[in-house]
Amino acid sequence: MRYILALDQGTTSSRAILFDKKGSPAGVAQQEFTQHFPQPGWVEHDATEIWQTQLAVARQVLEEQSVDASQIDAIGITNQRETVVLWDRATGEPVHNALVWQDRRTADFCDALKAAGHAETIQAKTGLVIDPYFSGTKLRWLLDNVPGARDRAARGELCFGTIDAWLVYCLTGGDVHVTDASNASRTLLLNIHEGKWDPDLLDILDIPEKVLPRVRSSSEIYGHTSLLGADIPIAGMAGDQQAALFGQACHESGMAKNTYGTGCFMLMNTGTEPIRSQKGLLTTIAWDLGGETIYALEGSVFIAGAVVQWLRDGLQIIDSAPEIEQLAADDNGGVYFVPAFVGLGTPYWDPYARGTMIGMTRGTTRAHVARAALESIAFQSQDVIRAMASESGIELSELRVDGGATANGLLMQIQADLLGTAVVRPTVQETTALGAAYLAGLATGFWESLEQISRLWDRDKTFEPDMDREKAQQLTRQWRRAVERSGRWATTEGDA
Image 1 (cartoon, helix red, strand yellow):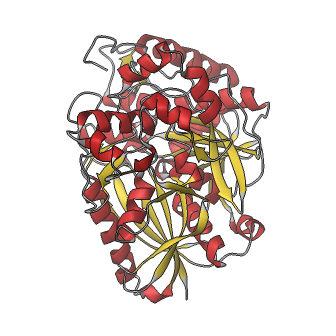
Image 2: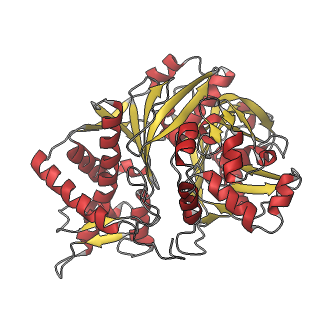
Image 3: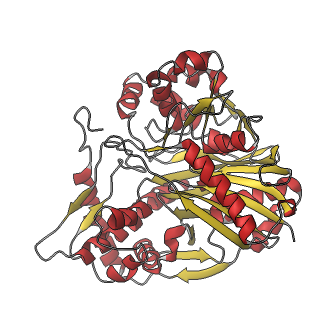
């Protein structure tokens, strides 16, 4: 037996998954790592801990499944996007904690960029809006705030990377400094029409090109690692949401998926032509394969599954995530919860919005709060999906879903009810890791074609809408009233 090993480096955990020739998981190992919140709105990770946990789970899954490293055909990498690592090129030591995609410390700088009139140029070149979410302003912050970093970067002594680049550097012992087109397109520094770092963007953000990785396709051999006991090619990379789109076999224009993880991310394949959004959606590179660049429209919800984690760890009203499904079985009791802990993403793009719970009375219970929290995930996704349908002119006949929160059948039913559209959960729900595996396997011939991969996709369950449309619309109207009340809360200096 031969396998593809997918390294799935997420926001809260590092995972390693073995996939066989049928695209089925043959083993998984996972480790959580520490979340750091040094100030309100700031989120950091220890990049060394990310690497250590990722290497540990890779070794663990091989050992637990009695698989020899020589049986691994290739390694594919998928990663939390936009999270920024800056490290010493010679020693591999990070110069600061990684700044996580959720981090909002650059909100004021983003406002300054907008005030200076750069929004149009940046959107035209990158397909993105100016927001602290993206990597470029985080890199700028590190260069300006880590002592000596800017001078060292100008001398070529430092490397910048999103997590994919960091892992490849570590896996290859510092020999390879690359990223793929999908991750590069999330930095505010890449011209997505040319597939190259853009001098004008580097000038606007004051980023020296010497720190940047080389941009490669999403499916090719970047280098090799021997850290698992054999010489294994690293052959596929994509940001987690693009990897999920690929793993869901959304290879044709007009197909879409929604991933329910820490955040919630919907992508629609738009083919070889980028569609510029007028409704707060992002235009991004889905993947670069065989010299052809495929684009996608994307909507981003910053806080989704993290809501359930907050109920467990912050409010402590549940002991485990699965418990929420039974607790939230009834209605919300008039409670609406906008989980804008780090601002709001698509279609609002309000970095100053903050979490808001409204409609509470003396009769409000933890069950109502739990229901409102689950509904908030579905409401936010609905906002994105409606914007996408309007922008693309395509009304989805079904929504393919994946991510850890899709195990919650109640959430999936709420989503179908609000949308009035079938929600389809695939048999293999590890679609993010699977997408990375497919990209790696295509590069080495483990899988032969997109057609072969598409035939491997199969549905597990379809959730059909079962709510009166007027009731769904009424709930949505109330949700939007709640969103209005959460907007631009943290507008005083120091709160953003």
